[in-house]
Length: 266
Ligand SMILES: Nc1ncnc2c1ncn2[C@@H]1O[C@H](COP(=O)(O)OP(=O)(O)OP(=O)(O)O)[C@@H](O)[C@H]1O
Ligand SMILES: [Mg+2]
Image 1 (cartoon, rainbow, N blue to C red):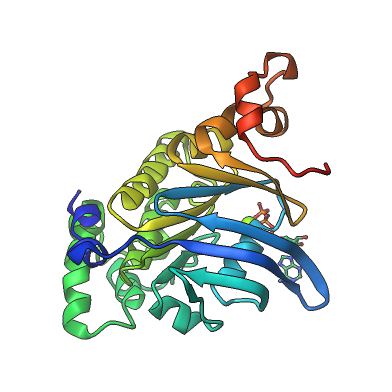
Image 2 (tube, rainbow, N blue to C red):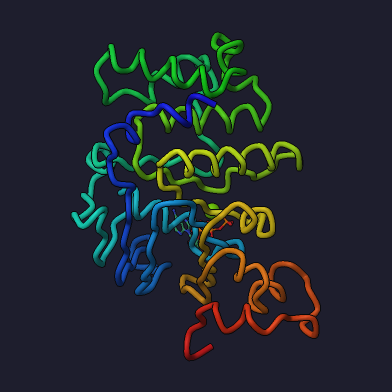
C-alpha cells in the first residue's frame, strides 16, 4: 500500500535507523526492572519476547523517555535524547501498550495529534498518506475512536505513530486481545512498515506469529536477556520452544541452538 512505500523517511536514500543499547538499566523509583541490558535494533523488524512482567514495556518506556534510564543508547551513532519530545524529534515513535487513543476524539483528530510536531501543510500531506495506506480509516475519519473495534483502534494507533514519519517505530504488543485474523493483519502491517524503510522494534507475546514476521529476536525474562538471534533460528531453539511454544524438548533441532546466543550462566 502507498503508505508504506511513499513515506518521507525513505526518500532521498536516508539510511535506515540503527539503535544500539549498551548497559541499560531502568525501573520505577528504587525498583530496578532492567539490569545492564545490551541489544541492537538493526534496520528491519526486531521482536522482544518474554512473559508477563519481564520488563518489555519498561524497555520501550525507557527508550521513549517515559522513565529514566542509565546506560548508553545511540540512534545511528548519536546519543538518544533523554526527553520524550526530543526523542520523537530524533525520529522515534511509540505505539504504547493498550493503544491509548483519545476515545472521545474522532479518528481524524487522533491522527492529527500524531503529527503535532510537524508544520500544518506537511501534516495534511501525511494525513493523506495515512488514509492511502489505511483506507478503512478514511471511511471512519469522523467516528469516535473509542467506538471502534480493538483491531481498528490498533490500526489508528499505528497510523497515528506513523504521522511523525519515524525512523524507528516501537510497538508494544500490537496484537494484544485481537482475533487471529486481525493479529495476522497487524503483524503483516509491522512487516510492511519495516520493508518500506522504518526500523521496527516490536514487543509481542504472540511468539510464533511474531517470530514468523521478524528478522531478529530477543527473549527477556525478569529484566535480563536470556536469548537472542535470527528469528527463524530462535523459533526453533529449545529456549523458545520449551518455554513459549510448548514443544517437547526431545524434538529440538540441534543447529538452531548453536546459532542462538544464550548467556554463559543460566
Ligand atoms: N509504574 C510502575 N511502578 C512500579 N512498578 C512497575 C510499574 N510498571 C511496571 N512495573 C513493574 O515492572 C515489572 C516489569 O513490568 P513491565 O510492564 O515492563 O512488564 P511486561 O514485560 O511489559 O509485561 P506484560 O507482558 O504483562 O505487559 C513488573 O514487575 C511490574 O510490576
Ligand atoms: Mg507490557
